Length: 584
Image (cartoon, rainbow, N blue to C red):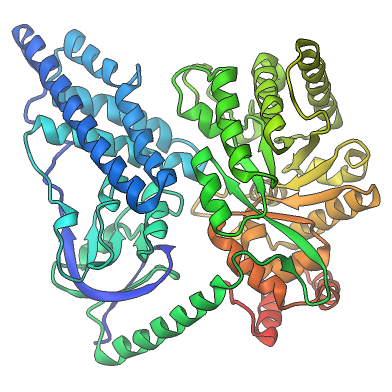
């Protein structure tokens, strides 16, 4: 038998094999030792919770210091965010309230609050925000562990080469992994944007997550091959398959070494067409790793994460500090800051947003910011103040009409005048653009191009709005594709409209980071490409091996095609002919 093949989501590249170490933490959050207490026990339970909180703080401090020393302060910030939960006025105090008012045991109180927070995150459509639920549960697990007086398995104690298999790995588990011994890991849950996935890439440990119930087919002591690029896991393979993967691993390592050469090279085609390659980030801590991956700027700074991590509206000073940190880190490189993209699909408890039948078509993004203009004014003041420290650009999300753009621009000009009167330093020449995420904006691109400084195409939303596909719906996920001919036509229309007016167009959706789409985007003349930092080297490699002339010819052929599958086939043929990176 060749072995049992299981598929998950590859989140950290690399092929590894070895004996399975099945990780089962000594904790049961679903069934606390006792759920309710008597009135006389309230003070004792409050004291137990306080002691658990203090021990958790000390442990996190140790982990933060270790992570800072081994991986840098940006990765330590992931654990610092967890520590911030312990000090959050709506976190531990809510547990104390459960003990006082409902006579919950400390364990029950922790579970109630943790699950309440985690459920809010899991209900969000943004993948990055959904996976913050794992961070909340990690904090809860630590508190419960101390309340139960148990000491979990220390992953740092592993002293033999293994493939770690677990239901889930919390960020605090992941930072304990010694890659000398842990060759790779596999989990039942998780996704590409989880903090565990981010840390695994930083550590250079291949990982596959999201195996679901299929993980039950893997037992302690089995021999396992994992491919962190494709998400493939093979349980107890035969000798022939084992040898095949050994060859693949050697070839992959050679390819990765080759990719490293492109990290700090500019993205220039063989006939001299240069494009700017930038990174998408959600927190200030991600700016430095973006530079290390070769980013020439920040093409999308998602400011909503700053708002999601607070229990009250972040002040102008708090926002200014975050924006300034990113701008200062990037030096003379551009930073495009997107104003608040929040709404019915991303809840903020302090905004009391209405529940909506269809939040993606509802009260969100620029619609919310224009309606509650004090939010936009505060944010624009903070961004403009940060512009004094670097090269800042501003863009408004989900603009669907010229009226919205003009109203937002008017508020921007008023804020500039206000700051100037106050004698506050800022860059008066800050460029202001819009996200192109809605078909109406793409169709009217020629009108918008006369007024905006730049466009940034958000293909993730543009695809779902153009072809009416909910990208989170597994039943119709196969229809969601940024290479749909209608999407390509809209992208072309936007780029051409900007160029006619002497403006530029960027792209910050998933299409920009897809190596398969790179020749198409070169043919379209896309000026700025922004993507997750891990895709930068691959995209640069592809661009450096093609000419704009041949890509324009390829575009002409693609424009005659009528289906997504035909487009994909044509691009794959082009990649194969050129010997380019083949998108998996």
